[in-house]
Length: 573
Image 1 (cartoon, rainbow, N blue to C red):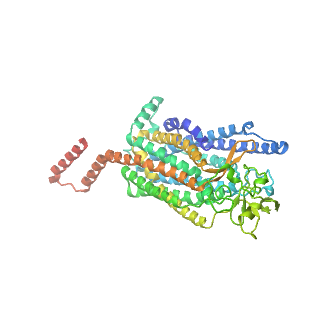
Image 2 (cartoon, helix red, strand yellow; image 1 turned 45 degrees about the vertical axis):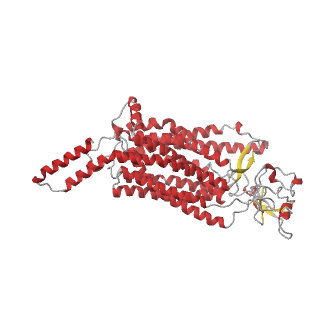
Image 3 (cartoon, rainbow, N blue to C red; image 1 turned 135 degrees about the vertical axis):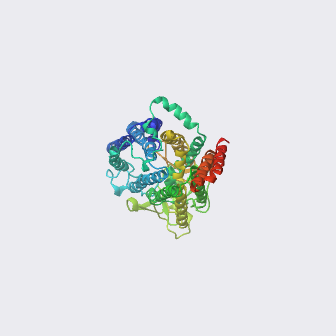
């Protein structure tokens, strides 16, 4: 479901970027916000309605309800597609609208401010997601006292559907101001020499293909596009699975993982983007300098990412999966290892996952697998007693009882998690310092009349080749580290209950570092091209500034003429 909004987005992105620039851009953006609100509301309404119907059906029939019998996915698909279509005009038309009517030296700062404010959305989304993840998915329809799992349990499903209603309301409100913005703004500083924005002069579909050919024929832009695809694959993989990585590697709940990302990582990114724009404005960085700053900060963030390989927690000790039943050695998992002499006569199902924790810190797949004979308590407070697998694993006199839920990680894991978050936040900040300079390189390395199209094509290509495939192959490789799969009531493989955290870390971080590292070859090539492209222009500008700073004397006429001749000579060569 992650890429469904982008399918609608991709269908219209190139055309909207090119032809939308000729229309009333603020109203085009307002219509997009309205469409996103409708899509979110459609998804939320249908999910809520079908959840009530499904709960009633299950209570009445107590039968297996197969996913294929529900048409809810169609409404989810349509709602997400509408959100994707509505999102299409926001970035390419909004950025070009700002850049067209701002001074060249102010444009990076304004765009940095816009991108910083834009991060308030994900920050609020992660905090809202954190709150919703604490609420059970069927809240209001089930007796919560009868629920025996907690938000830290891998079987817990939060009330993810509640966020759609909130986001729909906010999108509807945010669309209102755009309806009242003018089609064009007064140019800052009355810049008479600034060309008329392309959005007011281009017309005709016959201009699209030649413009696209010119754009992709720009070597610097094409190389930036290739590097952006790799970086976007890395970013989407990290963004999609970061919270899950924190859950599996460090034992954090989904709610806490989302909360920490929302209050630590994203504010660091927002500050970095803002400071990056401020640096460009303060020091009036050229295109080449902006590209160099973007590369330097990204590479420093990459080095910090490598440090995350050292911040880890060992696998939780789970009898039959990560340790033997006596808790003294690691095991190579296969289907038979979940059984032991202490539970072979209990007729336990190998597909069951209802973990219980002993006082010695070893988790058992289920009370049956622990060999328990009796229980006391109710709901989350249930305790199982006389567990034969526990009694045979530890000296006489030890407790043979277990309680519901997985055992927590060792105490030193919390120190590793603190180190991980510190490195992660610092890496996010340093990486984001180069975001605005990198964005300005895209805008400045091509002809001004291709600005909106360049931003639209970049979004189209990176989302097609990065946003859609990245979650698929990241997820497939991560699933290869699963140690225990659940089985659906209607048959078939369900969700993974526990991963090999060491393999998870190597694959997850290894993919990110490999993609990011490869992208730097393209960025270095871009810097070399930009240096060659802008060296002559920068040299001429410097000479003109030197000439303007010197007072004019008649006897200097010949030397000035010689200087102009030299400039012409550089221009020709």
